[in-house]
Length: 277
Image (tube, rainbow, N blue to C red; front, side, top):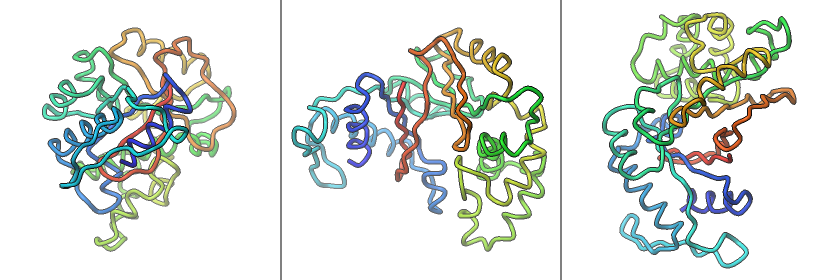
């Protein structure tokens, strides 16, 4: 209900420009020390959210629920919003194909993008001044949180963080925290800023060319070319996420109908993300 109401409010503020993405809950659940939602649960959740936005009465946890917002407090139902699902494996991709309008992925995961008429790839980036180094304080404040995602995801999905540049120092900081509270240290400042471990590791990660696939940072001319390549086909649309501490600088990209900027409200499981295009 919270997510349906939030999506309805965004639709009122930006009619025709809002879509919503759902996931089983990476940071949204693991930062709480909880496992991700199951795919059957997510499927039921998305279908329920759609039904609420249509104005229907639906059952959740054994009780009938409905959006009760009167006129002036939400758009009149039905509210038709495009919905995407974040999926990487066969179960998630199958459910996405069945009930969603498109696919959302991150970290350069595009293996299934060609299977959908609409696929959005989340990337991180900033526009550099001429000769500005990738490990400068300004750049790290702008996109360092996106770099740090490499540590979080590798660690949470059982990979070897020490194989990443700066990974050992990041892991040392994390494992120094008692196991009962370690999830708090891992996800501290997730996609917002750099926690202590990430600050120590990201200066090395920023300079490593093998880990640039999930972000675009460069001068205006160098940054815009990868975006144009990625938007050449509709099945590969980038969603550029600038960092929270950026200067007023933009990428003047000529595909406004397909370019998305992510807005990430804090939600509970499963994770949902609202987009304005």
